[in-house]
Every structure is written in structure tokens, then in C-alpha cells.
Amino acid sequence: GDSVTQMEGPVTLSEEAFLTINCTYTATGYPSLFWYVQYPGEGLQLLLKATKADDKGSNKGFEATYRKETTSFHLEKGSVQVSDSAVYFCARTYNFNKFYFGSGTKLNVKP
Amino acid sequence: ETGVTQSPTHLIKTRGQQVTLRCSSQSGHNTVSWYQQALGQGPQFIFQYYREEENGRGNFPPRFSGLQFPNYSSELNVNALELDDSALYLCASSRDGTGNTEAFFGQGTRLTVV
Image (cartoon, rainbow over all chains, first blue to last red):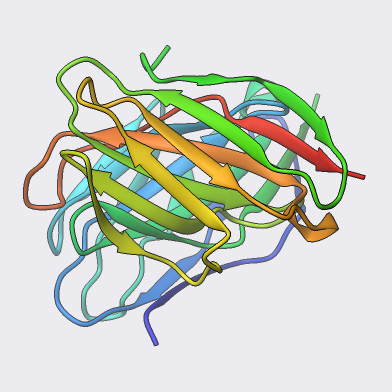
């Protein structure tokens, strides 16, 4: 069935390291794809999105490209900071702004 | 700050009780969706309201019910609470459209059932 799969965490990196969090999806049709971030004790904040194939979403140094051929939307950042420590959720829409979310990847960045 | 507010922020209830959670949508948004996020999991879709009508439901039993009011705010009601209902409940508001419009999430209500 339709779903979103993202790499399990936690991911622990040193400050200024390169980050990749993998996300793949299954879908009929052409969903929009999103990355949301959740800081401890808070709700979800939109990090970036892409609405069609080959679109690149970017925000705060994070990037992800909508790859239809590999059904992927991997999140990358060239140099992480301690303040990036959070849980990251990959999501896709279906049927009028309803979301399927992945299970989340916790990122710990050490000074 | 998304403009989506949820109340209360935390709640403790006893098994078997009933609970009502509230969500005020962002100005100009007529669609509210509710999600349940269990600890360590991604949010799961409960249901969506569009212009006061239910517009889709996830895999949740009928004891989960909702309402949307003319000002597009919304309530989530859960009857006969079970221990597994303990979770963070999130609401998201969006404008109607093709499904590519952004959804804004509230901070959530943390429900603990004891």
C-alpha cells in the first residue's frame, strides 16, 4: 500500500558533518513530498517541500530533491549544527492534504 | 508560530473517561486534519474536516469523533479512553485546494491515559 519509509535513527553526527536522511515512498499518482522537523516537546514545523518530480526543496541549508524514478526524497545538509538536533519526518500527501508520515529519524549533533 | 493553536497542552485522564481536544485553525484556512502521534512514532491520520463536513477518515474506531464549527475551528472527541490512546494529538490546518498547499501544525495536546 501507500507508505513512506525513512531510515531509522538515531543519527549522531559531529558539528559541521554532512547529513543525509533517506526517505522513499510508494504511491499511486504524483504526491507532494515534505520534510517536517519536530523539536523536543513541540509540534511539527515544515522544513521544505517539493510538489513535482525533479523539484528541489530547500530551507535553512537543508535540501531534498523529488526523484520519481527512484521514488525518493532524501534530506541533505552540508554542515550540521548543534541546533539541528531534532526528529525529522518525511511525509507525502494524498487526497486533499492528508499526510502519510514516516516513522521519524532522530538527529543528534554533538559539538 | 503557525497560527494554529491547540488546547489544552497537556491532559491526564482515566481509562474509560471521555476527552475533548480543541484546535483553532489559521486565519483563512477551512480544512482541519487531526493526527495521533504515539511516542517514538510518526503521526497517524485520524480524520479531516473541510467546511464543517468530515472529508476522510483513517483507521481509527468510531469512539474517535470530531466536529468543525462555522469559524473552522475543530474538536476531537475520544470516548471510552484506553491506555493506548496516550499520545500527542496534532491538528493541522490548510486551505482547500489541490492538496499541494501547505498544512500548518499546532503544538499538539499531550494526552496521558492512566
